[in-house]
Amino acid sequence: MGNLSNITTIILSGYIDIGNIKYLCFIVLILLFVAIIVANQLIIGIICKEKSLHEPMYFFLCSLSVNELYGCIALIPSLLSNMLLSKIPEVSLTLCHAQIFALYTYGSVEFCNLAIMSYDRYVAICYSLEYHRIMSPARTVTLIALGWSISIIKFSITLSVNVQLKLCGNVLDKVWCDNYMLVKLACSDTTANNISGIIGTTVTIVAPLALILFSYAKIFRVCLKSTREKTQKALSTCTPHLISLLNYSVGCSFEIIQSRFDKVSMPPVLRVILSIYFLMCPPLINPIMYGMRLSKIKTALKKCIYTRNHIKPVSQ
Image (cartoon, rainbow, N blue to C red):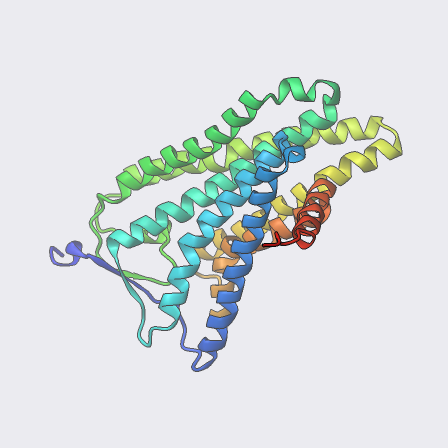
């Protein structure tokens, strides 16, 4: 037992042998990685450059894109490197903890950003005349900073408790390092870790979910009392956010079900796809969807492309 508790590496056994198809998967993954980087950087760049987009709604979207770049970079490079290994990938425990921190803070910040965006839509629809007073620049920055700082501080506390655990095994049936499954490998008492996890889950899920439900309950109440035209306009501004929220929630549900319920049987390939769904699909879908649905972003993008295409080289 003493030797087992001195574990310094973690084996990720979630990778399956797919033969030469892994090279095709590697190329597809690289293309997805590039698409995520380009799409999110484009959203961030346009919002920062165009003064017409310097509004709370677009700053929250910018924060969402920054977080999705953060989560993408924490996951995909490790997937790419591990995919090419002929043997089962083995990573150091320190790197495993670092990836856990990055991916879990990504998940928490993502949900906080979506909650803040729902509150922003609530203020814009229910208090349209007072919107700029309520969502002042100072409050906008404060909300973004709170979402990031609470997520980072909260999981830093959880991880600081978990790194003290002595492990009796080092095999994770995942393609990325998972905090819950790593705690399950502990041969020491995990009571403090379970309490920390429950508190962290409450802060991560319950608080943002309460804000989201409150915001949309108020929005739908206003829509029921408004004209059809105003209702359609209100719902159209909420549609991208609702799609983002649903997409992320479904992905998280997949991950929670397969991680917490070991007896759920499914094909290994499907298990891998579902385990990375919430880490890859939102960062790819969100910037594309917001870019297509929000008219101001489309206009700014067309303006940027038009300006670039019509810049004449300076004659020498």
